[in-house]
Amino acid sequence: MSTMPIRVLVVDDQRMLRESFAVLLNVQPDIEVVGEASNGEEAVRQARDLNPDVIMMDVRMPILDGLKATRRILAHDPGIKVLMLTTFDEDEYVHEAIRAGAKGFLLKDSSAHQLADAIRTTVSGGAVLAPSVTNRLMEDFSQRSAVPALSSARLASLTNQEVRVLGLIARGMSNAEIAGHLTVGEQTVKTHVSRILTKLNLRDRTQAAVVAYETGLVIPGR
Image (cartoon, rainbow, N blue to C red; front, side, top):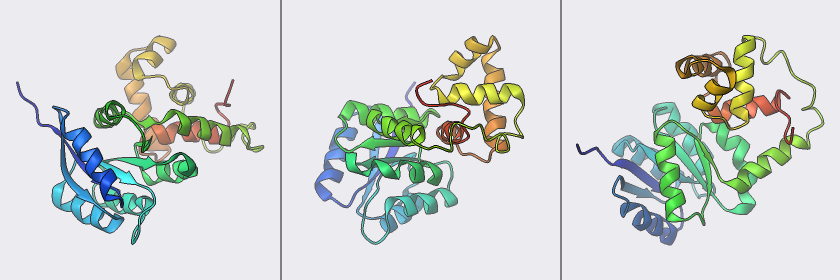
């Protein structure tokens, strides 16, 4: 039985990079690049016209940057998955990108295999952070003096079990792994995750992990 390919919009102000990404992704049997945009305003328009499943979004662009474009796109259609594209020295944008609703953060020098896998992961409901970005994120939290003291007020709406699940999400566990760790059914974990996102007004597991570190529920390196 055939399935529809994942529809991707590539957004970058450098034409050579856009075309390279398009070529690399179009050879994948389950991925189709349906459009390209050179700035955030074009991305907003094409997102509405083309209805892509995933947008690979550059951070720094003229006219409208990738973060502002992501907010506009997701305000209109929260079902679109956005993967931010960055260079190593732009990792500081990761917090803002996650809060804007991005599902992942990838380096522009990622391999075709990494790009394709990241797209598949986001479509299936996951989130992706390049290893260097993850390291930068954890370093930022570990250096904040205010983090070690648990901020219980932020988590007051969660049950004890939901707090446990939130902590395990932040440690990178899948639903199946959390279920095994807590000795509960996977469907129960899915319910807990859904309630956590609703209660904390979060878009996804990536934002949930950030909250766990920000509140001191999970301390980097422990």
